[in-house]
Length: 483
Image (cartoon, rainbow, N blue to C red; front, side, top):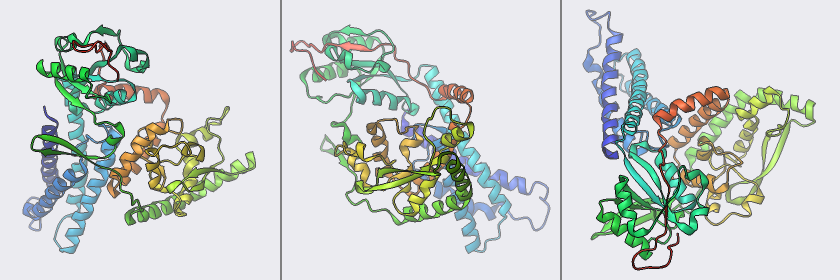
């Protein structure tokens, strides 16, 4: 099954859900009043149904609501569908009000609930279908050529996108690079094979795809390996080098049969959009009104206990400008921490005073988490791109589980993806995912373990039967290849 076919299938199921939801909501509203003269006819709701279908087709093509983005995480799917349906309902009610259309608000409300539940059910069914394909072995086996973080990350991304129906069968790497391969990537005994027999071995093991994640893809040995794999019917894919180009907007251009990969990077002008400023001010004000009294109460408790209620940390904001970031005076991961203080850290309640930084214009609700001057001082030009926007209380890296202890390299990849695709819809989605993440983090550890195990059935982790150690000493070269 091709990914595009699955996307179209999910969209078709969404449109069917809209029709079924409108039919059921109308039936539930008038199930006891079919003979009442004042009953609205079904045709009165057809304009709303037509508007829903058009809106959903346009929105799905714009923000990709099929569930693929974010790696089929339920939190991401939920946080994308909820604001989308909310916007749809606002438009439907606004249209009914502006046109003075005689319509039952109860029907529309029930329709919105049923439609949202149907959308969730569609994606859960799609995940279950993909899981069944993995269990039955109807997937393409892929071998990754390369070592280090690039090859490992490709494997992880394949794991998080089951709609690709790919399974990582192993890795190919030069013999002299064996010690540099991350031990976490090796789950079986390595096999030493000379390059002249690699393609035959891959074909005998049922490998369908070869993914090149090496910097020197024009190396004679790599070219020979590619030619042999293509001859044996093994498809070959490649990651553009340098890898940093991955964090850009790619577009494939066919120039009379010559493939060109056009890359659009992050714009130099990163002024904060008006919609982002309004969202920051509105939500930060609401959070301040709701959480102000609890925060001051806890701060008073910390002041009595430790002599100071709030703590400040010097962080680098937009364009590297330093500022004081506020937080409650709770030491992270302190020994002998009380249960209430532990829960406050687990739910990030101690970080709530940062809404003051948002109101002062030093931070945003969503964006790259700010880091200290010592880390920023060692940034490369690639890392410094994350300083082009205001830092945030939460961000794409945080909803994927990355914290302060994670490397700047890992967080920057997510941060630059956010900068490339930031929008009002994405910000709202990330805020909802943050609520989900904080709630999930506060659960009991045994419960998290059980749910994680149940999710693994729907989110298959490909088994790596062997890691292939490859000499790359082909017939026309006596030197060992390098990565």
